[in-house]
Length: 548
RNA sequence: GCGCCAGUAGCUCAGUAGGAUAGAGCAUCGGCCUUCUAAGCCGACGGUCGGGGGUUCGAAUCCUCCCUGGCGCACCA
Image 1 (cartoon, rainbow, N blue to C red):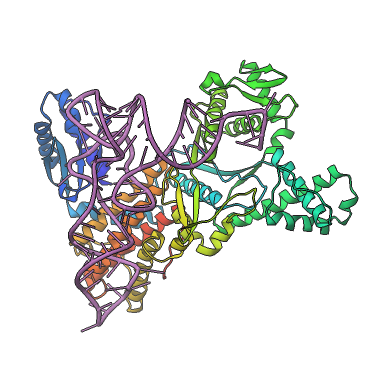
Image 2 (tube, chains in turn orange, yellow; image 1 turned 30 degrees about the horizontal axis):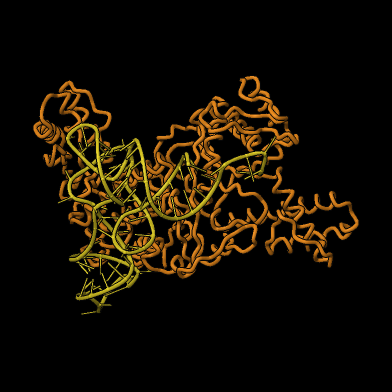
């Protein structure tokens, strides 16, 4: 059992015996400074009023009760304003080894999600050009989140929303068409809304090859062909890029299909019926102010076209009808103004709290400290593919997941390529590789990894053994915290800590030259560390190499 | 003008529903390889947590007012 859970249960028993109410705000966690003990609890401070005692005395009372009643707790003492500090026996920490052996690749997993259906929608970039590095951050985050939620007992489905119905697609078709004509020597200026990227030229060339007669077609028909072809080709490219990045979406959902299936009209009807939509100035409006938005929003323009917002409401309506208890959308931070109205819409659909939006801040791409310009329209930008080709998917993903999503991220290609501590991915992977290399070497010397046995575990008796054991015990907590707060970076930080303890262990204790029993015991421990590093990295979608 | 996010060591950042003396890495300085990967380890230096006020036993964390930076405020998507 994990230390936090263990201490919580022990304290709860004592508190119940005394007839007190367990305080909701109780925090039980490892203290920041190890000299305070292995685990620490603040319940005495919270209980003082209720019990009409001063916190120190109360903590003392709890300490004595908990120490006497539990063989795993070797010492409990009071410090500061009434903290209860608990020291666990080394044997207690060794139980984690058993747990890791039993659960293996499932160690760290839990059922906290209780099978709740969760959808994670991410990337969903308009198919108007290749993915750039900012999309990469969203991709890494969404993919990792899906893995983390799955591992904590959620029923997860991942999705990419394809905006194939709107204005951007028309602009794409037009851009390709205009480029095609320009290539034929026609003197046409670039329209205002125009994609200028090099890839547009390639597409127009390909269209002409496939449809030699396109120049004689009516313009609307020609533009339509350009749009169709361009979108298909770009989507294909996006899929390939994501695949190379190790990211996969289970469902690709088409905006167009919503419109064609009448889902948008359906949603309009149900909003009207609920009195949440009304006509004004020839347009149809959604009463989003009823739900805290600062103005009402247009659903159907006076031109008769529906807005992006309208199909997005229908889209989320559809998501909920598909039975998701929670929908997680990952958007670029430049869409943050859009969140209140989308939340309003979900509330109007009767699903308040059913949508959680994660905004991911910009990625600032640098090369050796120099800014690299990025703009989809202008055509000068670093694509995700270029970045992944240059630094590799592992390093890129790890960096993306090493910051909380609402911080801006500096991504320096030179630093990410470097194999230094500026680049923590190598540090963590190196920990794994070091252990694997030891295993390999031990294997060559005829050593066979055994399962733990009491006489072996007896040999784990140093401070570094203890440090590693305690760190292993924390892994499930860190996974749970990252699932609860939808924050993969917590796992990334945990792994760096664990790796640091491993490297220290490696430097301090020469494993293979120890006496046979001790050597075996250490290999078992390090095997557990490798397992946890591997499990953690897999939640981030990063490879755990056996050699480097 | 309104709103969202950020401001923590020289730099890049952690800090999980308020908890103890605010933590890592990089950089700087000083140590550690005749043995398992030195892509490593140990030590030193480094801070009025942007600023002021408030809430309480206790604030980087919550409230409020300012300052700075980024982004958004469409019958665009």
